[in-house]
Structure formats: structure tokens, C-alpha cells
Length: 260
Image (cartoon, rainbow, N blue to C red):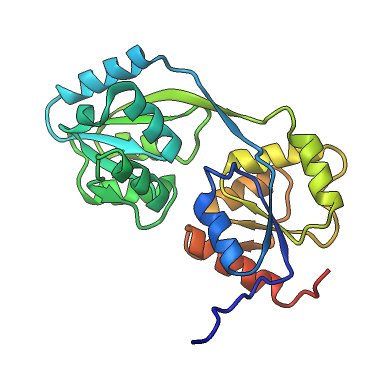
């Protein structure tokens, strides 16, 4: 029996979400041989009370068919199900932006009816449009400031869309200090999995900027676009917006570079 390849052996990778949020990514990086440093650059602050979430769920649940709820993050799944329970989604078609969000739904007993092939807001919009949106009622519980044009695309196709901002992503107070300490210890790559982590990375770095030789690798095109808009240089983008895709992109990006 041969050992599993460890293409990231000797590499030190910075993950910008909590261990719980990025569990799959951290595990895959360890399997690939990388040393992982976790510095969460976002934390979640709920901004919609459970009664407000329950009210929208009830309104959508009694609307004419087809009725949809579209989830663009696992965080939104946890907050909605925590407020109303998985049974409140029973009368709706459930859409998920990608595997992590779908897994969160499965864990709550609310298996998705649709999972986007391209794991970002535009990919979710395209997948839902393929199902036909004329006359549909769609509930989109999202983070404040969420981007990607999902609601606009659905409305243009004839859907009635309710966007409900249920949480806010903010940078932890300790993030700048923890980031400086991590970078001082030597980092080969920083992974970004959302526009929020990109913007907060820039804020946490302040005037220092990304150290020379540290590459930034993004999970998808939307994250990369927001990273560039924030002033970051993106070295690689995962061909598939998933944990495995991100690890492959990291491996291909770091392979030509000497070990530190």
C-alpha cells in the first residue's frame, strides 16, 4: 500500500475562516501535507430576530406555487433553521449555492432540491432560471451587503423575490494582531473564500500589504473579482469553486516555488 501523495508538504497555508467554518478545507490541506494557520477574518452577527425570519417563512409558505428559498451560505441555513425549524421549509423548493450549503441543509433534515453547478450567486441564479422562475415566489435570506446579482436575475425572469438580511459579517477585533503574528512566522499562501474575507484581509493588513512571496488563492471567480477590487493580487483561482478545487489551485500555484 503506497502513501497518499502530499503535494503541499513543507507549505504553510493561512485559512481566513474559523475551524468550524472551514473544517473541510483544513482537513484537505492537512491531508495534502500543509501546515495550516487559522486566522478568522470574519465572524457572524445575526441582525434579524427569529420572529422576523418566521414571518417571512410563513408568507412564502402560503404563496402560490412554485415557492423557493435560496441559500447562498451555510450560515444562512443555520440561522433560518434555528429560527423556524427545518419543517418550515417543507412547502418550498430549496436551492443551495454549493456543497457546503447543501451539507448544512442535509444536516438539518432539509435536503436541497437544487444545488448550483457553479458555486456562486450567478451560478445559483443560472440553475434556478433553468427550472423556470415566471410567477415564482423566492425568499433569499442572506448576509447584509451580499453581492452577486441573484435577486436581480430572478426578478428579471418574472419571480417575486424577498431578500431578507439576516446576518452581518464583521472582522474580529483580534484579527489584525493575529494576522501579523501568522505572517511573521512565514506563510506561503492565503486562501480566500468570500469577498468579505478579501476586504477584511486588506483592512487587517493596513499599510503593510501582503508580504513578498505570499500568494493569494481564491475559491472562485466572484471571490477573486472582489479581492482584486479590494486591491489584492490574486495568484490563482480554483477551477471548481469547492474545497478540492481550492486545494488543487494551491498545489498548482505553489509547485514551481521553492520551499521557504
